[in-house]
Amino acid sequence: MSLERILSLATTLVLAGTLPVAVIAARGFRDAPFGSVLRPVPVVLLAYVALNANVVIGVSVPPVYDIVASAVATIGALVSAAHVLVLLTERRKV
Image 1 (cartoon, rainbow, N blue to C red):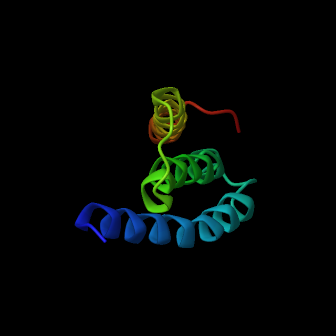
Image 2 (tube, one colour):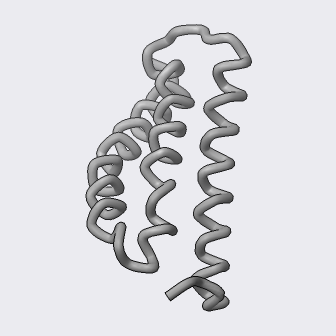
């Protein structure tokens, strides 16, 4: 087993292990102002798991798969960051 595959397996296991915690946090804080920040986190984690899964399994995927998964992760992170900015600047509805 190559070093790249071992590191991808470790990354995938850690991300998959934190996915249930992220879902619980997003659901638990859904009514709080910070809930909007946590809402995209499970989607981001799932996209990163999808990006690493092909290396762990050893399957070749088309480049479109990597582009879509990466775009979903990036957009989710940007949405979460935008909600953090709104929360920190206190420009939200009460």
